[in-house]
Amino acid sequence: MLMSRLFGRTMRDVPARATTPSHRLLLRAAMIHQLGAGIYSYMPLAWRSLAKIEAIVAEEMDRVDGQRIGMPVVHPADLWRKSGRWDSIGREMARFHDRDGHDMLLAVTHEEVVTDLVAYYVTSYRDLPRMVYQIQTKFRDEPRSRGGLIRVREFVMKDAYSFHPSYQDLDVYYERMVEAYVRTFRRCGLEPLVVEADVGMMGGSASHEFMLVTDAGEDTLLICDACGYAANSDVASTTVDPPPPEEPTPKQEVATPGRTTIEGVADYLGVPTTRTLKAVFYVAGEELVFVAIRGDLGVNEQKLAIALQSSEIRPASDQELGEAGIVPGYASPIGVKNAKIVVDRSVPAAPNLVAGANRAGFHLTGVNYGRDFRADIEADIALARGGDPCPTCGAPLRETRGIEMGHTFKLGTRYSETMDATFLDSEGEQQPVIMASYGIGIGRLLASAIEHFHDDDGILFPASISPYDVHIVELGEAEQVREAASQLHVALEAAGVEVLRDDRSESAGVKFKDADLIGIPLRVTVSPRSLKNGGVELKRRLSSESNMLPLDSAVGEIVDLRQRLMDDLDPERPQWSHTGSSSE
Image (cartoon, rainbow, N blue to C red):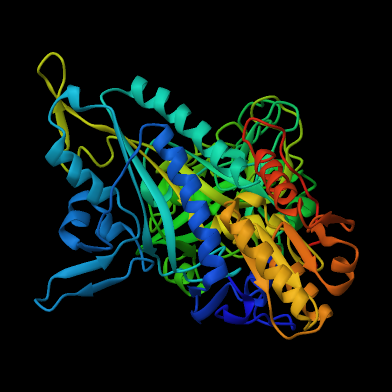
């Protein structure tokens, strides 16, 4: 491809709306163009990289016995009503009516559609196990699109689904899929951190995210360097040491004028915050939720949503609390009748707590769970933080940030039972198909690679996903230079090397800046000086050094170097690593 014919143009200035390195570089390198919030056009350079990512993903899916299919992007609502998700998924689902007034939606994901296929085509245990996958467009009406391709509304995803006759068979295959995911990301130059995660809208018994650890990540991760425990903060646990056991004491009302915070009350009464009961209020759907948790702990809202089986929760307003007869700053669950009470697991083990008296200016001492109040739901809803004890070994947890590159779910019979996807087992008994799903965001993976591989000058593409293998820069207007560059271009492509050639009438400085910005791994400069020295100048994007190649051996040496760069990305080898600047 000649750069004089390439659709799009690079940008020198950093776009003000771009907040992450990958977003800025994708815009500046003319790889994406924004149409609307979270909606982008992929330009030719990005499209080539995305195609290579898709090819890697497809090869790894085929390697674990996947069969590629294609499913519709527009779904009738009836399938989603059958699964129960038509009502449980919030406004991120784009709904509309067709010309006949039927409820329809744009695909958020495809569990319902693939389960419908399984219900039709799987009838016997002999039809299992199976895995199918697709690479297809999805739409989620994200409330906070950000980071370019990191969080968008329209995106391309590889989603795979496996079907099994038993949980044992699922567990064995799930491990194969985890290994396939790790190979996929490594082939793209990235080392994933596998963490426990929330099942979210997908449901099921367990899920794992494949994270790229980076400061630009939108997820908070908690890691134990001692035992290897790793989890998204949405589901991370910690060890909560209970206070020493005590005999329950009588409840007693004490005056606490103007003390409306845990710290203020604890200080006024001379007790540690571990001996207080914190009240936090939310609304789930139309229901007021009273959360009671030990005073030194925070509420993990994602865990709370899971415990409530609610897709959307929000903090309650003072007006809503007033209408329910609750006094902010002095509330306790004792005697409350207008709210659902959720108690963290830290509370039952903590005796003689200080809690609100449900009237302004007063608190209660000697409050004990079970004797004085009970919960509608008991659950682990505490927020784990860096420095907290690991739930596995007790060592301090380390907090970091990450970008989710992939997500896997053990769905179990969540969909097959509600959608009648069953099979006859070897005894002739009808059983629900056991399922799992596995997703990788293709555009997000491209953004993740750029987020990880860049420096102050631009992108540093891993060879496996670079839009081209070699960037030829021809300098000057001499016919000899054009002829040599053209011959090298033709010879490299004949040898299977993909070439972007800068034939524009621009200065050397402009051409070199664009080459660094676009980030193709190998740059070959053809100039009057190089030809005078008998060859061309070869430079790796990662290196500040260059070397001369004789014209008659240049193609062979470039082909060999490109192959070595590809070999470095073999998932079985130690990984290529680059620590670049995040400032661009």
